[in-house]
Image 1 (cartoon, rainbow, N blue to C red):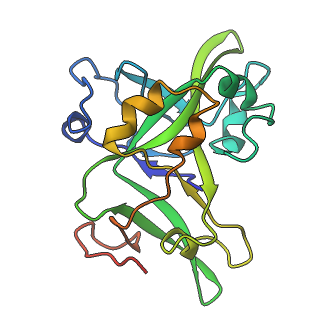
Image 2: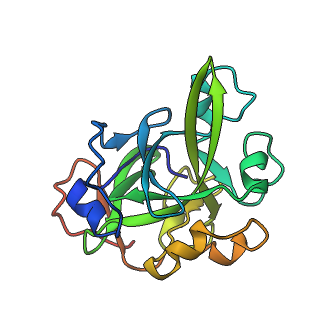
Image 3: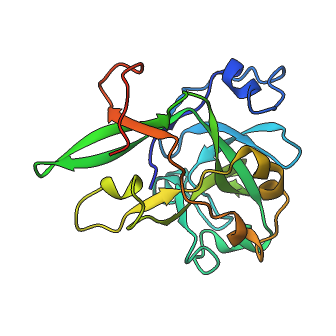
Length: 212
């Protein structure tokens, strides 16, 4: 699961081969559900969308607070996501770091997760366009997979909860994901590799992380 994250700076976004010259919108780079954030579209253009899917039948922007993640196992069936899934409306979510809770001595503590080399990365997303309260809005969700047995991601969330993970799309598959159809999307449901580190969120960003 991922309910909050930071997106890369302009200079960091350039490392993802996207054009940022026209991207002058002022956004809070720490993103929570219902916030606006950059997403990468099919032609590697940057766009801005609300974090949390807003289907066409939603009647309130607050709906985004409940649809920021989409389970791959049920995405084709859930009313919030099935239209976007049917029409393969895939995007990439650029991220520099994200945050997950880890339970230590029975208490939840937030941890930062980022690449060991501090480079930006891209996460599999799905987007939708809708008219909500007479306003056109584009929104997105991150896809997630089960992580109960993943050596890194299984350490997060409450002990009794199912472990979930976002899907990082490696550089060599980014264009493929953006142009994939839903029937073949499962080919890109990659598990996170061992290039990520974690440390308490209040720690300095240059603190060396640990995989476990």
